[in-house]
Length: 520
Image (cartoon, rainbow, N blue to C red; front, side, top):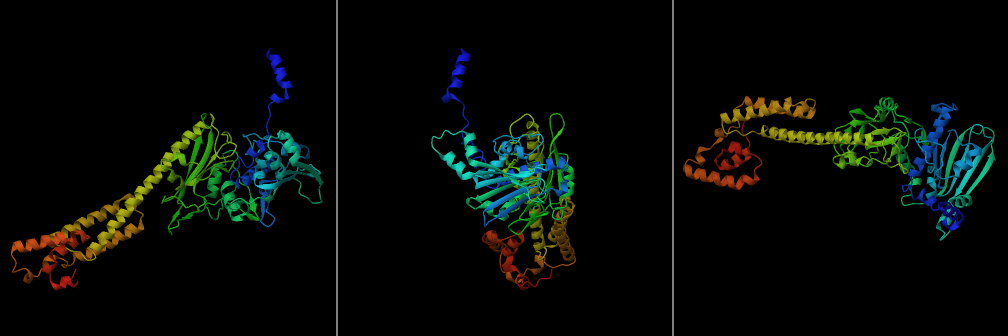
């Protein structure tokens, strides 16, 4: 009975399983909602092609190039590499198929076979040109986005995905001209559409994006830790750097030693620390680094190196906020600078903005959360230490003011105050976190010098400046009441106990004190 039913279903065209042409919309503009993502996809494919060319001994790593040309007048973008290329006989199957790829995620950055169509959501036409070292002709495949868009928009259309592709693509082969490069792949986006900020045509925006997302090297001139980091990360499969140029200018990662804040303050990278993540069998599945700074605050948006960036094949996954959830406070994610490079054994999702849940990924996520707590503590401790330092500086400032124009009731009070001050200064000097703090050290030395000078003098003792003529006709009770009234009146406007005392007995002091001619 089951066989009869099956036969009936297969013969009945209305019941056949269909993959509709709208899948093309999903894997173009539907999947890549950020325009600059399309450049990342083409750079990813170019990197894999270069690896294949190097492995085939067609060239050495130093000869590898990925060139991006942006032409605002013609509204075109060209991404070209000198990788292995695609054979003429394989062009139709490779460049006109959907979700078909001979790559595997264990060996390559791209493996799903959909990234090459990323640009269709952002331009009218995509042209692919390619050849391998043994081909005599250049294969050219053109995808007409306008035709494809019209087919997708048709109501009730029953055309299959194969029919939609057939109508919107064209393949041709062109004879080589003398001296033409032996192997290459070129993608051209023609008539790039205007979206919002027109980001794909903004060379500066594209350059900033590529500097964060692409598999490129650090600038050793701006970032002295470059070699150290590269040596550490070379153990991760797929970690490589490529020379990428935009309109002839080489692009590097944005990392540098100094970070500037909008309020004029700056922070500096003082050192770096390395981290490793191990799988269940003890193998290294990820490796990375983070910078040691003063952890002053969240780095501003224009500090492109902010955040611990997660990468695979040295290509960014998500953005600087990708690891927000591992921190005890999300704001701490932007206090840090660093990278974590993940092995190919951990599988990315199709949009390359996260990982698929898998057995291989579990230990990575567990260790990532441990790292997040550690990095959060670093931020919290830095914040507490900074607050303690500011409090100490304020205390030193008050002490400096007190011993600039000191007030002592009598000789005993003077001795107690000096002894107490020297004790506080000694304790501050002996605190380990202030050993190398030049600002605090200088303040302490200045105050001690003031105290030593005051110790040698007898001035600033109030009892020496009381004017007996002003209170000799007053009873003790009257004097007492006057002082109490003065305390009540002056309490809220006095900045220190010394100032309150002076305001309380001001009318009983000699003119020398009132005129500031006392000798301290």
